[in-house]
Length: 258
Image (cartoon, rainbow, N blue to C red; front, side, top):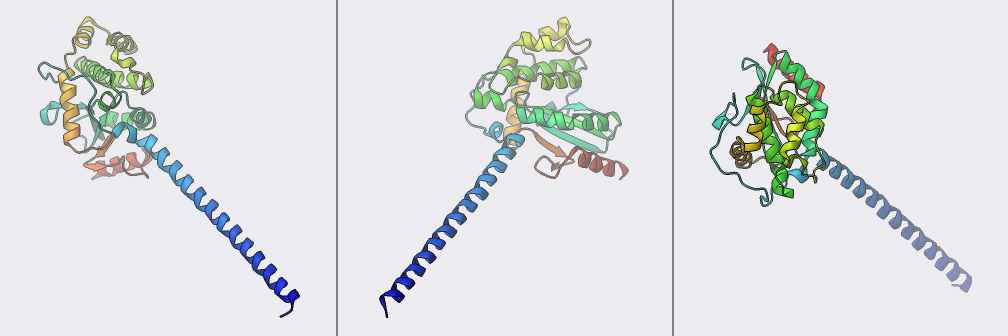
């Protein structure tokens, strides 16, 4: 074989090797982009469903002492549920929530008008369970204090309105602003007729602190993994990534028609 032919074959092999390296590099970049996109989607989903809030590590929150006093009208096992809507409704939406939880606020912002519509039309009733995961994860007492204040609002027949005000004025997750009773009483001023001497005493004395702690213990015992946990007629609908307010309304209306 001539030197010229050998040189030509060597050049061809080198070109082929270079081309293969280019293909390998392109494949690595493609895989990196796919993995990167997957991570972004997972992290985005985590932010929405409260995976960070769900991390039920060692409870750093202060434990309450004293008797367990359920708010007026509380229902269910151990009277741990605050009901909104008529008992005769054919659908029941159970919500486990934490007033410091940003994912709970996101859920409220998206679904509130639909939930109000369905409860006001007697097609659905809601059972609210108050927990304090963020107190346990980040420390502080804002979840507890806000939960107690919401229970005090239930005593006054103003739970739903005050519940909505708390989420509309929710501080950043790392800001324990709800630990201040004066802040919670200030927000009560946004609900007509709520800021009374009775309400203030209930908030300042922590009448329902032990009840909130008991609700939090029930949440953990139930094996739930994060807040909000939203269950419609026994089915966890928050885990359904196709769920929308429109779909929730459709499911409730179907149940209402039997």
